[in-house]
Amino acid sequence: MKKIDLRSDTVTLPTQDMINAISHADLGDDVFNEDPTINHLEELAAKTFDKDEALFVPSGTMANLVAILSHCQRGDEVILGDQSHTFLYEAGGISAFGGIHSRQLLNQQDGTIEIEDIKNAIRKDDVHFPPTRLICLENTHNRCLGMPLSVDYTNSVAKIAKNNSLGLHVDGARIFNAAVASSVSVSDLTEKVDSVSFCLSKGLSAPAGSLLCGNRDFISKARRNRKALGGGMRQAGILAAAGIVALENMTDRIIEDHNNARALAEGISNIEGIIINPDVIKTNIIYFSLDHSKINSELLLGKMLEKNIHFFELGPSWFRLVTHAGISEDDINFVIGEFDRILS
Ligand SMILES: *Cc1c(COP(=O)(O)O)cnc(C)c1O
Image 1 (tube, rainbow, N blue to C red):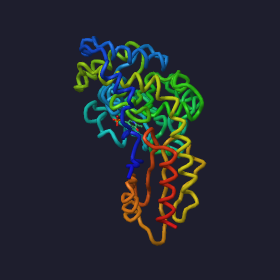
Image 2 (image 1 turned 180 degrees about the horizontal axis):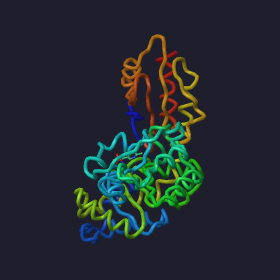
Image 3 (image 1 turned 135 degrees about the vertical axis):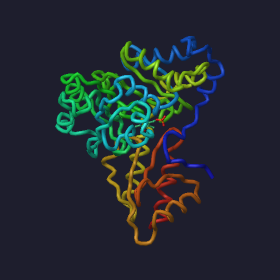
Image 4 (image 1 turned 90 degrees about the vertical axis):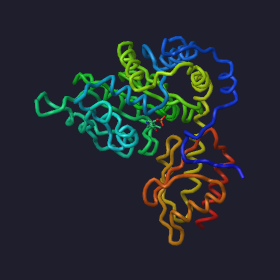
C-alpha cells in the first residue's frame, strides 16, 4: 500500500533530475566562497527575488535566525505574529542566541497583523523600552490556513517600517506557494522588504537548504552570523545542485498541490463530523476540525494509519493536511474515500 504522507511538504524526496544534478555538481569550499554550485544558486536566488545577494543556509529556521541576528542588536525588539513560525517553532532562538526581545501581535485568520496594531506596537524612544528594530511577516502563513499575504498588504507594512526606520523581514518558507496562489512573482511580493528567506526543502522538493536574500551589507553580516552559528558548510554544492533544479523546475508545478488541496477540502467538507470551509483554502495547507458522535481523533488517526495515510492532530480534534509533489490526484481521491468510509 502506498504511503500517503500528508503531515508536511517537508517529506518530499529529491527528484531524479536533482539526483543527477547532485552527482555531477562542481564542488569547492563554500566557506572560502569557492563552491561554484553554491555561488550559482545564490546568484539565481538573488536574481529571482531581485535583491543584491543571497546566502545559502542549512534550514529555514537558521535563515530566520541569521536574518533577525543581522537586523538586530541584543536588547532590540522584533514585532512578529503570535502564530508565526519564528515565535512558535524555532526553539526561541532569537532570544536564546540573540538576546532579541519579541513583541507578539495577534495574527488575523488570514495571516496578516492589523496595520493599526503594528503602528501601536512601535516603541517611543524611552529608556524604559527596548528599541523596536524589525517587523517580521510570514508568507504563506503556515498556522493561518496557509494563507498568502498580498503585495498590497506587504507594501503597506513596508511603508510603516520605512517611516519608522525599521527593517522588514519576510519568512517566505513557502513564498512560491504565495506567488502561485496570487498569480504574481516572488519579486513582486518582496520588492519593498529588506530581507526574505525561503525553503528549497518544502514544496520545491529539494533535500535540504534555504536561502536568505537582501542587500549587500545585510548579506555580508548574515554570512558572518551563519558562520558563528555553525552553518558554514564546505562542499555544500551537493545540496545547492538540487536547489538549482528546485528553483528552475519545481515552482510551476505547485499549482497542482493547490488544486489537490482544494479538491481534498471540498471532498471532505460534506462528510459527517468534518468541519472545514473549503473556500478559505488558497494554497497547499488544509486545517479541519472533527466533531463526530462515534469517532474521536485517536480512532480516526488509527484507522487512517491502517491505510498508510499519515497526518497530525495539531490541537484537540484539530488536524492539518499538507499536499506536495509526493501526493497525486488519485491519492486525494483515495483519502477522501477513506474519510467517507470511516466517518459515514
Ligand atoms: C518550515 C518553516 C520554517 C523553518 O524551516 P525548517 O527548514 O524546517 O527549519 C520557517 N518558517 C515557516 C513558515 C515554515 O513553515
